[in-house]
Image (cartoon, rainbow, N blue to C red; front, top):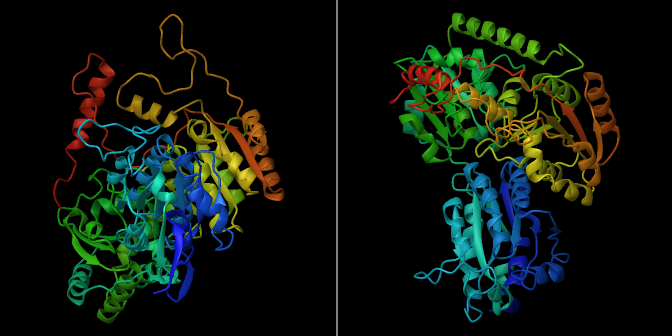
Length: 625
């Protein structure tokens, strides 16, 4: 057997460069490159290997400003490529490693593949305790990297070079499995990274990992067809799995052919164009009137590629028909069985195709009166969205109006990026997209700070796309450092900072549960009361962004925003447009509810009133399905 002597770091670089995915006959690199911040734990190991071998094997290195951000870049890239490709991320031991925990949690919760390679303490334990080592009095093998275990789909720690021979292939298997994918963490002690071993040459052969498309079991398919045939008011809820499986055409065909309306989740928005006659808009806590009214009376819920989180189900209050049946179509058995429904475990494209063929053979189509109701509700909802997006006062914009103006500039194919605050709910209702990849929301973890790094990941995945990062000032203040990375890499981004003086999403939620304004707005501390209740803190986001190399402007009016967006379209580079927004002109809720518990005992009358309303809403929660 022919061998080659390499360090652990060098072997990892060569191995990763030889991994590919294949689906439907199309191949691509599994690991597109490596993001990293070097420290004493990895600069002489993986760092040395990337410098020596990275160019030769086409495994480029990227340098971010924050370890959390690089995981967000990798996750966004994976999302944009339908989970067929991703990045590896390396950090030093200690705070560099633990900075990646938030990104790892987001990737795993959102079922997105990322490969994390944090350094670890010395395997030989001679320098003990090493700088940044966590000491535990009774468990000598514990390090801070053990915190990755609950937020990773696969975790390993490499103590000997030859352990790579089994660990790396298993890591690739998990990354490429559509049901098991998420963050994969391989902790690398800093001494082991530099140790050498005679690796078999065959270990570095080109390997193609086929991303499976499981077909539905005939018995489960027959039961699913029977459920749909018995339904008079079926409703499809589509999630991100539909888009990842590239099953949007099959979804449209099923909906059109059989007269079944389609409601959207955050991850599933864009599976059908907004103006498709069977797209009834968002459902649940952040839903619109059309989907929520159809959900309330549905006798069959068909959940396609969705986790059915509490926002999609309005905390289990959206479905009120006592005769409701549930059909879960998902590649992951865990998700397919949600709400005690019939699980149809299969790839979304193959499942939808098989269902449509079987229903077509049976001649199934919903009744004309149901289809007329769908059309009426959709028309009413579209008119509501038109009204919310229309500028009423050009000199003082609401967040809804800002969204409408940016959407006009983006068109149906420009990508909008967001993750947290009140904006995800507003975008789900108001953004109009005509392309499955043009709506990029991270709402499984709703991680503040995701937006700007995600914009970089999207542009790396699809350089020809126009990308619009819509971000509140609260999120902007958390992870704006990656503007420097975008400038460094020559990436074109349009970043719209909505300045509403702090965490207005939680501020609104706070008041809705009866709590007076407290701690959410960006205000000076009042000297008399001791509370953060003074004037707003004047942050100059324009100067701040310009200092990091962006082309930055203030756009306080509708005309100024239109002009700034047009300027950004015609000029390369990072453009930051700061838009003041009226924090009190909010998008209302449309018959959706979200379970946020209210204090059961309080001396404040507003809290007491909110608790009574909460108890009344809780009585609508469906405990069983």
